Length: 370
Ligand SMILES: *Cc1c(COP(=O)(O)O)cnc(C)c1O
Image (cartoon, rainbow, N blue to C red; front, side):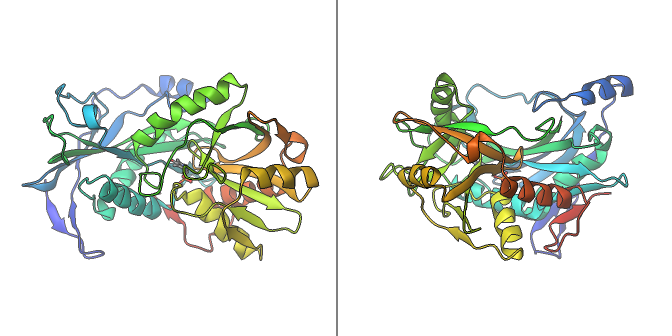
């Protein structure tokens, strides 16, 4: 495998060896799977994979048939959860070309996640190259219309050792899954359950890192939300149990009657790329956006007084989901009468239009693959 010096950022980067799948899914079957793919159960023919060990560094970069990983039962990730991931999408434009949305931001966040989890940082250029190679080889799997190809880069600790220490070996891989439009006939507002028994992240912990462990720790609270008839859980801060942090996998925004927006500050929340993009688009339009703490009590009061007009959750998978109802042990309340509002829907359209290349891209967020 060729190893060369990347002049752009000075990092080592790799030449990927391409081994196209000998038996890809036949075109007819693929077309059938793309009709209503749902989320995360259908996969493309290939994966990108790069290995790391302390002696060789990053090496053995390939794009090959999607296949099982043989893992020894003592592989570190299976015991101590040294694992991180990312999520981004490839979008088919009306002219047949393909866009990625801010893959550089995912690459940077992946690097930050690796550092926090004491894993080998992957050069950002290698991350982007792996994603692009996979999109190129599996281009035919990108659904048209409002669908997209969800890309899932991830890294696992692959050293075979039961001692507790940072792994000496890692596997970085990217898989891809065609996904449909999250919403048919417009996004349905979600109901959310305020978790008072469980928290997601504490100061000094891993809340700002995209690691599987955060999700494992959130599942009990999510199950509690479902038990209470809600779609999603929203977490409060771990210290005072008052401030809204975020949902299990989405950031949150509040829209007020004076036209301003508020979103919880960075720190223990995941720094969402959708969150960052919404802040930028809103500020472009002259909207005041505050990144400030907001309590559940204030939320309830502002919803009752009419000061709060809308609330919505955001993330790559669903883009923007309006929040219609908030439920908690101390009672429920509706937001905007339980229906989607114009602020959430307007921002959603703006963002989606940029992603699909239907609107100008003033911030240079789009990277065209084709
Ligand atoms: C990935 C993620 C988000 C959303 O991030 P995006 O970059 O907008 O997709 C929000 N919260 C958590 C916990 C996440 O893991």
